[in-house]
Image (cartoon, rainbow over all chains, first blue to last red; front, side):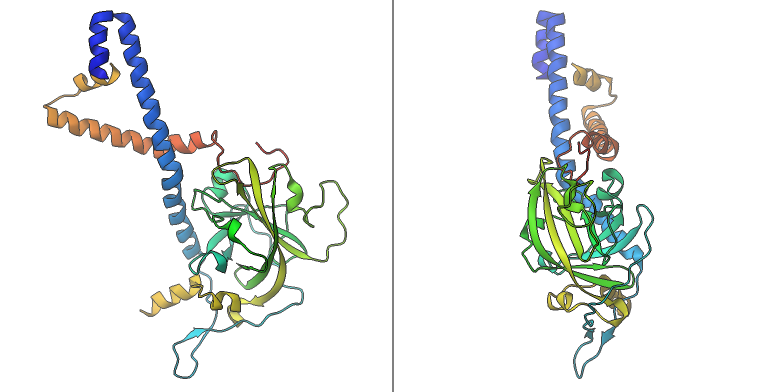
Length: 269
Length: 56
């Protein structure tokens, strides 16, 4: 290419020189876009996963209790299931990481941080799952709503379409487990904010009825690698448990490695 | 043209020029990964995931 353009520059003068420069600019643009795809599909995952791991480690929360049954290895205590009004944490600061997100359906090693806010660059691209600040906190009456990337940036909601009705979604704050169960999913347009209403489906401006139920809503992009629509998963609250009384059976049964437990093991070695 | 000029502007024997070109390329890629692509991606919203009243 360069030789050709130089040759034509010698032959054709200014015209050849312009063609040569334009050709090199086009090649540069092609390389730039190719590298952008590499960055978007690979490097953002590498970077975000590194940050998520660090953020989870920085929480430094107390571990759920362990027990040592007769002649067995020590294992986590199964948490009792409380179905009365759960304790609600204080409102976190903007960008504060205030919860851990466990979904056994997405693998035993799946755990992602939840931060306050849904700003793309600051929260969703960096810290993982973002909590819609206008929605309630975990366990409260209303709709605890979170957004996450389905592709790229650590893709915390990569498996959002694999969720089945009844699947547990476990949210841990520093002191409390909140266990939700998936009820339904829907695909909506990006402007359909009613999915994160205190009662999902309640249109903005409609009077809010007295709240009696505790919902969870996940929003992710749809289709994958597109921003055309949103994939929405709704769930309802099942039970809560204090962290210092054990670990939810849903996580133990799925073999989920609790972050604090992993740290505990590392400390023992 | 441009790259031809760059090649001639670089000092030293061929192996050194190749090395310098590689270093310059890696530096350019690094600048892109760190600053240019994060900025550029704001204009390529292939992975927005929130619902908003005024969604882009």
